[in-house]
Length: 108
Image 1 (cartoon, rainbow, N blue to C red):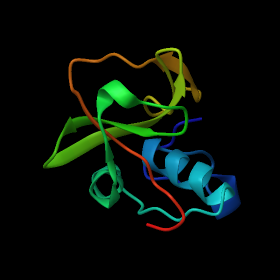
Image 2: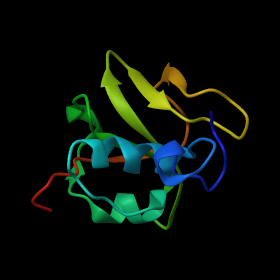
Image 3: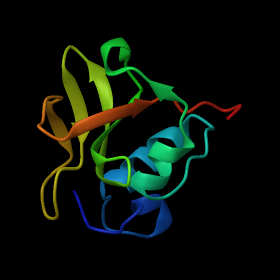
């Protein structure tokens, strides 16, 4: 479940917010990324939106403030913690304010 500012049960929280979900998913693969969506975007490296692959992070907002992040899973879908109180779910990738993607890796 989405809970604003939360990093998930492993960190003692009741759920995840969008960046907490991304951080926990990458941590489970041994990859540490920053805590907030804006910092995750800036951590990069960048991937063209036309070259998305499953596991890439996609960002919504703008380069000054990424207000949302999700994990691309393929076929135009994302794993999403959409808003407070909502269940983590699959959603369509498309949105008016989708602006960037990154490919975090263990060597970054």
